[in-house]
Amino acid sequence: MSASYQHLALAEVKPGMILSDVLLDKQGQVLLPQGAVLTAATIALLPRHGIVTLAVLHQGDAPGQQAPDATLVQQRLARLFRKNEIDDPHDWATGILRRYIEDFRLGREIER
Image (cartoon, rainbow, N blue to C red):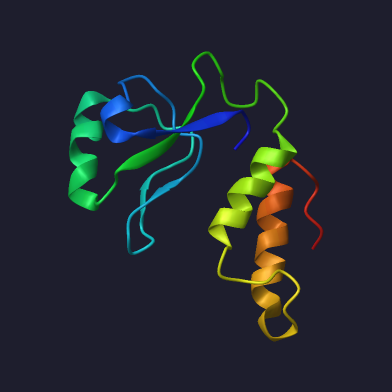
């Protein structure tokens, strides 16, 4: 997420809004890429995939227009990884994944 975002109920989403993150279905399949511009037809199809809320860019934001808010990124990652401990020695792969995602979203150089 390269700009500030908000979570909206599907009923509040309007055509022309931009996704702030990749949209996945319940099985983890990509439905729409980050930065996709939503159309009325796309919005109408989302309930079929169990989508009830969307993370969209704030009105007037454009991808890359402002620096990402580290607090928002941390909150989102805490939600995504809520069932995992970042420093669990038995689940080191999840910790590495979380750090890669954090670096990517904050625009930091990813160490290899």
